[in-house]
Amino acid sequence: MPKKDAELETKLVHGGFEKDLETGASNVPISLSAAFAHDSAEQISNVFHGRDFGYVYSRIANPSVVALEQHVNLVEDGRAAVATASGMAAMAILIESLASVGDEIVSSKSIFGGTYYLLKEVAENQGITVTFVDTCDVEQYRAAISDKTKAIFCESIGNPKCDVPDLKALVSVANESGIPLVVDATVTTPYLMSAKALGVHVVWHSATKWISGAGSAIGGLIVDLGHFDWRVSKSEKIATLAKQYGLLAFVNRCKRLRSNKGAVLSPFNAFLLAQGFEHLAFRMKAHCDHAMALALFLQDHPAVESVAYPGLANDEGYPIAKQQMRYGFGGLLSFRLKTPKMAYQVVNALKMVKNLANLGDAKTLVIHPASTIYRDLSPEDQKAAGVYEDLLRVSVGLEHPEDIIADFQNAMEDLV
Image (cartoon, rainbow, N blue to C red; front, side, top):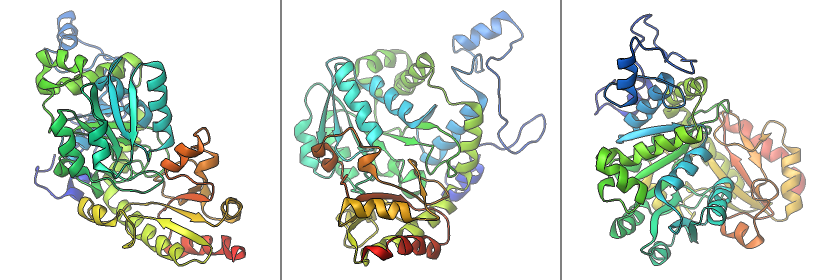
């Protein structure tokens, strides 16, 4: 492991694994084993009871997965990290860790469609009330909190609205109420934003996206950033565990749920995500540069009604994004055309850009959110999430920016 004060790029490259002691291999071995043998009944019993460190069953813990967790936790400067089978698995575990029947959650409105559907299902089937508020209105969060509220949820950059909440202000609101602020930092990644420095209590990532960087592996991550004292948690299950595990009660609860629900990350996917994580810094710099170039092009195109990208100086989220982010403003943008028909025309006319329901790939990706990811939302809920019939979401990739722009320019030439 590098020194704790090493630069971020160094932590990304060297923070996960030094070498295999037996072979000298410098990449994390893929431990494709369901279970792990022990030399005695006493030894395996000690591991089960937590008296000794070790592995017994990959549904509980696996060396490849643990290596990824330790690497991500080092970069986030957290207390501990938990890797899961997907981003949605991470979110589901977070909800059940923090809230029970009769509890409440406050969430921003402009969130990824899958997260919205999950929160709605939780409200309908688990007896948890979810109150949705304007992402950037701090007072709405404060007003929505009651004695039953167990957490605040938001995204570091809204997907696909690209709005930016004031995380320091939301941390203050959460601290006033003695509850954690949980932030989906998928779009910003640990490289573009230090959630720990902003005071955020918990972050989670769909590691499938920019952390993977190649669209080749599904995975999720939860990181306890160390700011919240779980010994005084208002969440019943965590408060009970805190009597035994203290500050690690939340992480313990997440790991128990991961095991009990079978929401484990495969060792092979852990290996792929670890490979992507090492070069995250250099990919994100390019994603940011290319997204800015495309945003500036679209902003000046006569067929474009508006562009949402927090790196644009005239974007509403720019002042807060500039304070909260480092090195750039991410690889996600969205733009509106003058009619829904135009949006379909552009998607169908693109040659290089891929029409995919994913983000963070090396390739540039485009999708029409209203007819796909957000198809089941009411028109009112779609609007609240920043989804319109004429809107396209773009995950800007690593191709040369001139080629990305040229593909959009050619696809839009018949619109004016």
